[in-house]
Structure formats: structure tokens, C-alpha cells
Image (tube, rainbow, N blue to C red):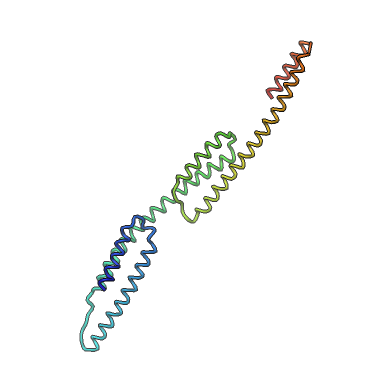
Length: 212
């Protein structure tokens, strides 16, 4: 019994020295179950010894060693459990705060996708949001997938809109180039015009057309 007694207490000591108690929940439960199984067996053996002694007319009482072991074990176990509970509460609070931060960024990204048309600012803001997103720690597991999926969807929308915006700008530049070449051709035709009034009128019209 002494060997196993120290084994259980030593394993508890090892668990108590863990920096991240949240990760040792299974080990704690397994150790407690093994300890309880051991105690039940020791108590059964002790009862048999007491009954056998009684049959022989002897009085045999429990030496209290099992009760003492249970007290020592559960005091240490409950101390670890209490510290683990504090870590879990802190982790949950941090994850809830991180979730709030990510939801703020989701809102900012959604507004950016919907409203902003200045392409330079688009990329600047998207980069800022992305860096902030990567810097945020874990969020609650039950919403982690949905939140990441929403962020990915908004990013897809962002780059899709950028692609369309650039295609429109490219088309506008091409169309404007064609129109300006037309204005230049009309100007070239004025070189041979003899009437100053006609030239002046045409120049004014062509200047307006160029600006448009």
C-alpha cells in the first residue's frame, strides 16, 4: 500500500506543477478514478480482515491509514482542481473578449467591402484588419468555425470587388484613351482651317470634350 500511496501523491504533485492546468483535465480524472478503484479494493480487503478476525474472536479495527490517504489525496486534488477552475474561467473571459474584438473587425471589413471605393485605402485598411485579426488569440470553440468562415467569406467578397473595380477602371481608361485620341484627331483637322472664328469655336468645344 505504501508504494501505491506515494505513487498517487507523486503523480498529483507532477500534475500540480503543470503551467497549463486546463490541458490536464483527462489526466486528473484518470488519476482520481484509479485512486478511487484502489481505495475501494483496500477498503474491501480491510473489511475482510476485520470479519476474519471477528470470526476468530478477535477485535480488529481500521488503522485509519486509508482514511488518512483519502484526506491527503483529495486535499491535493481539490487544490489543483480549484486552480484549474480559475484558469478555465480566465481562459473563457479572454476568449469572450477576443470574440468581441473579432466581431468588431468583421463589421469593419463588411463596411469596407460595401462602401469604400478608393483602392489605395481599401488595401491599406484590409491589411490593417488582417494584421489585427492574426494578432487576436483564441475565441470560444463553439463559434470558432463560424467566425472564421464569415471572415473568409468577407475576404472573398473584398477581393472579388477589387477585381471588378479594377476591371471597370481599366475599361474607363481604355474608353477615355479612345475618346481623347478622337479629340486629338479633330484638333489636327483644325490646322488647315482658315477661319479664326471657326477655330476658336472648335477649340472651346474640343477643350470641353477633353475635360469630359
